Length: 255
Image (cartoon, rainbow, N blue to C red):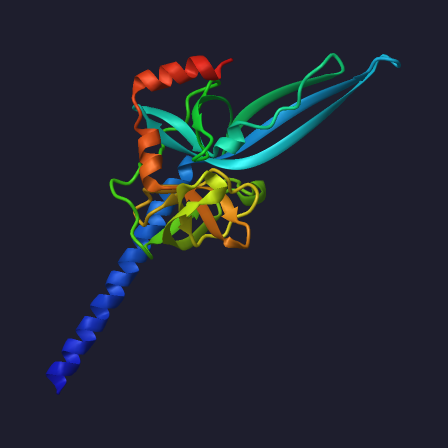
């Protein structure tokens, strides 16, 4: 009887130790990943002039999202949602003048002016490069395998623009699988059980190792704890396109 009791206690102790070790590894992975998280800001400066009174008024509009530093063609770039990069732009005139610009802000408050490398509107993916200084040394690697059904997933984001210093919101959920979504031209999208709101767009979805498996671009219109992402396969293909495609897109995107 004592022999069985000892064996039971030893097994229980090993299970507890393994559980603690697993949690410690996740904390370490997320702590490393948060060093690569950026807040994305899209600014529009609008100048409206009254021709009769010869006076002008200036306004500023801002929207926020999230980005992460990843590797693309062996270069560090910022991954975010395409709708953060490409805004609906009203037509300019002699009366209305509009200036747009994008910037990325790291958790320590350092700002980077960024420009588009390439984007995919249908999958809602965009990558940016800094034109005002080199991005920090940290980046998130993409996983070598797709997530499995009910696999734990983690999301580092700036919902509502909330991110500062060591405080980077982290959310936990599960991978639900993939569906054909009519709202995205009947393309396949990945679903995660992760809460999101404005400001979460472009935020990375990670596995327990802190590796990229998805990127949130929208929430389910009926339930905001169900988020949508480009599938792992589409994200992988987008990030691993060759240099020729980058150069071609850079020339097109600058106009």
